[in-house]
Length: 114
Image (cartoon, rainbow, N blue to C red; front, side):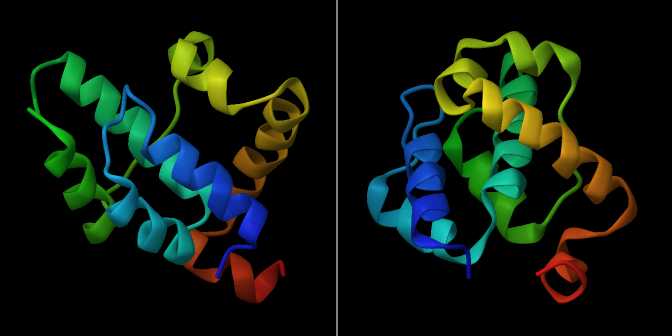
């Protein structure tokens, strides 16, 4: 279970007007998943939404619950959504998380790095 401050960040991300998840749904997701995972899913979903591959937040919920592959691309880092939810320090910390996630799948991170 992510720490409370991370859950707060996740809820803020999921309920952002560009994402559109209801707070009643966002809370349990934030309690179950790490912020980094949710951020990757949200940004992948936003790209799919822009491309017309999905039509609404149900596609994001499906992605999160099924654990579909997701990643962050450089273009994500310049979006207003990214800037609202990532401070410069968090952005630097994200670089470390990217390196770690490249080698350690999320489902094992809490066992190996914890």
